[in-house]
Length: 333
Image 1: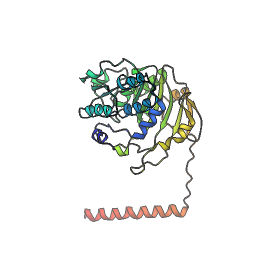
Image 2 (image 1 turned 90 degrees about the horizontal axis):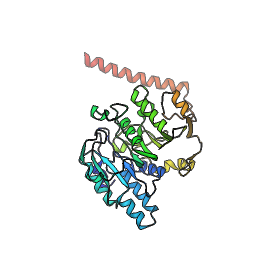
Image 3 (image 1 turned 180 degrees about the vertical axis):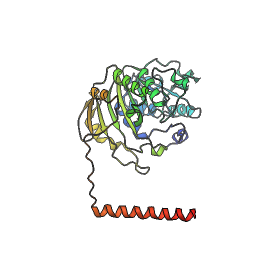
Image 4 (image 1 turned 120 degrees about the horizontal axis):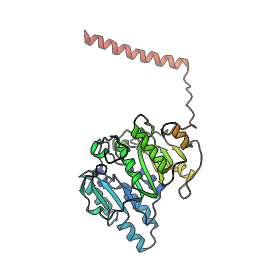
């Protein structure tokens, strides 16, 4: 982990966490921004998505004009935190982006601290790559600026992202699983309905638990990929949730090898496997826009424990309970 990355990491600060490098690499590879397109991150942190997108686009550059384009008029972002904003600028300049157009302020409330570098930003963008803060809560000053009002930071950011895309624009976004399955709050349902009506949500990748463990977050997350301009007809799911991720065994790009074999980014041709399946938009509607990944191909693990094994487990647990109760009685008397 580099120095700038360490400085920009914000453990347990309003649900904001550094996005693992491998997740960024996968998302940028899937969305595949082209030279001439604008790339935007509305909560850019230290600029990881923008920096990785630049590296991919630099490999495509064939002329001096291409290089000038990606260095000066391609990358746009917003960042709220006073400490992180200058780190983002420094990081992107060190990555050879001569003019990173980063706005300093609260994206959701619109409260600006410094917007000088963002003055030439277009009203809409071709590509959005982002990881909104998990578990954040917003007040009325943010909620009043959105059609579907909620305190959920991620849901408001999802609305912002949809509204920030050009027709035909593409997005890769990290979402807390709670956003996908919650149907008990009106704004969650309305926002997901907006997503499916205004965009083609063509892929959801269910990540393993603990992917963000090294950044201090335990949230179960998913990657959503969508294109604005046409409604969703069906969603292709890919399931990685059964991988055991630890601090010493983090998520790697190799975990996505099968995913990239099944999916052609240029044609969006999506193939089936034990880890993948499709669900129609009509079925999603009948579930009140619960879009959580539930793999129909996964076989339940057979419980091979014998009756004797189960009895031994019960006896062991009963012994532990008896010991605790004995200690409690001793303490009371």
